[in-house]
Amino acid sequence: MILGSDNLILAGFIIVSLFLIKGPNFQYYWFIFNGIWIHLYLDGTVGYWQQHKWLFQKYSELDLRYPLQEPTLMTISAIEFFIMGPLCVWIALRIKYQKNEILTNFLIGLTSAIQIMGTIFFVANEWSRNFKDVCQYGCFTYTFANIFYFWIFFVAANPVWIIVPLQQIITAYKNLKNLFEPKKSKKA
Image (cartoon, rainbow, N blue to C red; front, top):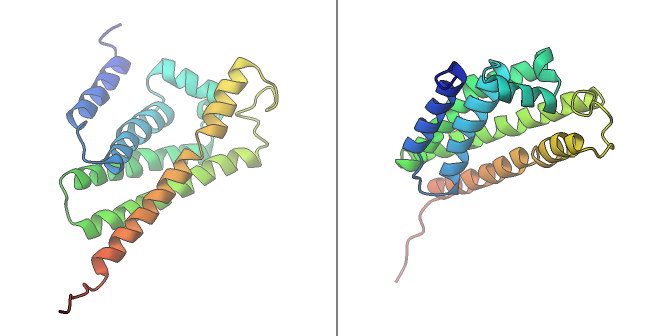
């Protein structure tokens, strides 16, 4: 059905994304993409609220913790939907409209630290379960599904949400340091 709730939700996210598409730099795009698509739509609407049946089925193939509503995963997904998504969109808008650099850089550092912590808990939780939910047939079986879901989406993709937020923290720290550093006067 073209006007089904799944398609209307997806259309809403597309429209909001198109409205906010023009931005000044990579940092803006990182936060707007993560806020709208990763936190609010994929991990929140699809993972936590279990909307968009086809995508939820793919999430469930990737990680059996989703259909089981495993508590740690649901907590992380709730934090992503209710806290991380809105914070990322707010940061992106603050970057775009150049609002209060001190608060913006503080929020970037805080949000990026929460992102790193969430990624570590997401991976560590599965590691503590011997990868039974992401490697249903063994991690070293090289079937298409295992390569696609485990090696690409779990192993290769998760470090992105540690490396880029760490880079964002470093950039925010440098920006704050420059903002608070006393200006050196030029002597003739």
